[in-house]
Length: 489
Image (tube, rainbow, N blue to C red; front, side):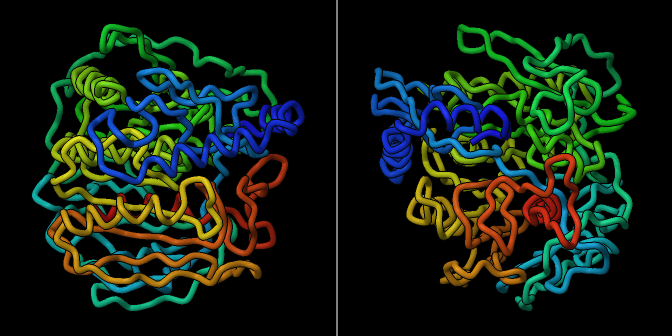
């Protein structure tokens, strides 16, 4: 499921009769992916040659999936009408009733504040020893995150429970920063002039109308082609506003779903800037370096570790050309992209600070998988593509690796009715090692990455122009929650 609602609707018209076959391929890929495997191993979408899917697709046409290493091309992924569901932040002010994620307790509903100051502040020790948290901010849905790297304790450390937090208009308060860190370790590119060159991002048109899915992404940057693993690979990239080569910036990777593409991640699809980079570009106030890699065949089979090699090559190139805070390299992905984010968590935990996985499964392998890493993860009770049974092994691996206390976390009731507040429940695990929190969110809806409480809408219709997020037309709680969690690291 990508984000181009227009192309998805066209695809639906063409493929309605073939829908059961596409759905079967998608479900098969996730079902086959629950076991552990190598970097391209038995996780369904890799070297076993089975049909690869890993999530729904919204880019239209016959979705090619991620090709497997020995054949079995993936043609699957059901298609929605609006992509990876758009975001928009939630709430209109005030601090969050549930507190920010601390070291434990279940928190349900709209945490991380929705305007006004966020109750968590900075981490109590200034980070995990990898550089502390953001020195100049980055907001969690409108609240001011403090500008230190130390001081200030996280709230809800004893597990205070919040009862909801309804979704609503975009928060209006708070300032954001430039995505740096007080204890940053600067990359080799700091102080240098980049030699990277950018091309126009494919399928983006400066004359495209809002909501078309073909608008141009926000900020300086564009499309980059490099050589990796013996072939050409591509990615879209956006620089922070007013980029300063003496200031270390966070580096964030966003991996598209099966059949998706980098341009849809970069421009936010039909939702536009509201959901660019799954909503985090706006959440950061354009204060970080954002990268949207393009998968091979529309997927992340990671055959022979080739996608991990691609990640390594991108990290090195960007670090050598731009000023990166090497203690805050982050990844997120939806569906098949969630599988790739999991592969990164398993194999690159010493490079990446944390990963966010939306409706993911083991689809791209898990090479290693024994090191701790910060994890944010979400799954829907109605997700029949990469459901609860595929999500919990990922969670449990890092609950163990991170030294967290195992528990049976709460979850919302199955719909109907769809609740707002109460449509999602997020749990912060207790006892986790410093810098390695696990936040687990369960919602009432299906296979999407920007869920809206109170409805089964997977496409966040209120964020698609000419509509706007408001209390009467709520948008997703997800981007604000993820960004709030990331800024707490």
